[in-house]
Length: 354
Ligand code: PMP
View 1 (cartoon, helix red, strand yellow):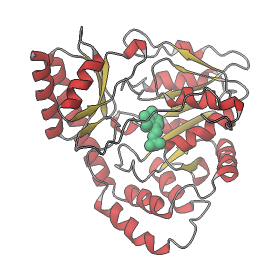
View 2: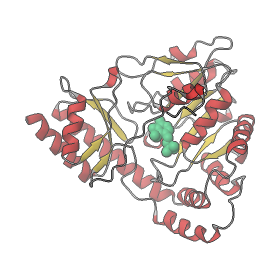
View 3: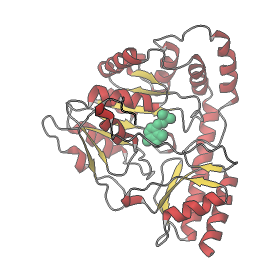
């Protein structure tokens, strides 16, 4: 950090994304991307829209919002758009958590802590249970003026879904605090909490095109909430980056909604491969959480996670692991193609033999 950086930021840590290596070709299972390309209709739509690149996009993003609203059976006034869900979450932290602070699990998306620290927001980490599930009761004790809540559901890096009822009980516990459900992986689960925005005006559901819609490189996301909250998020958007989504990202997002068959088929592929791969890992002796996402969270009892990850890397396979004490021996493995996962299972069997 230079001496010029404002004092407030000195000593803060930035989020560290999974690496995008260029030194050699890896089987890349470290950043929860889709192994499949976007729909051919998406790539065709991008090519078509590049002709208008001399013009700014519509700052209201009406056509994108209409498609997202129709997809969820809500109104356009319930939708705001982001360049990936990270952008929306950034605004949400600033807009809604400043006064009351925020709570989230001790094992969850690492960016929550980074935003809280960056904006001087008070936060508390609530330990997950021993099996990495959440105890909804930790989030339903309504205290007057108590903290807001952000939960990834399914959670990352555990892959575990909280359950529809648990989420609703947390949202319903205190109508005066904002509850944010980060649904980056919900398309791989069996439910979404999006319909609850019709019943509760304190809920924000954040969604992304990065995982289930094969569009991590294109950067597109959106959130659903009550019209009042959406107006606040639009205030943040217009106060920072009113043209936050490129014309190409919009074209792609709209085409993805239009090609529902492709989307559903790719999600089904990932879910099938995930469940088969989880079984294979268990057969090898791994402890594996019940994943509702496009990654698997596993540990081999008695084995050092860092060493396992390093051995896989030597064999050209990248997975993600974290240094924090509670999960230092766990591996978070993105679900790739059936062929990639079978290569990984063979590599693990070989490593464990040696
Ligand atoms: N939330 C969670 C839980 C994630 O794992 C990620 C991916 N790193 C994001 C949000 C952000 O994804 P994006 O900005 O690509 O939508």
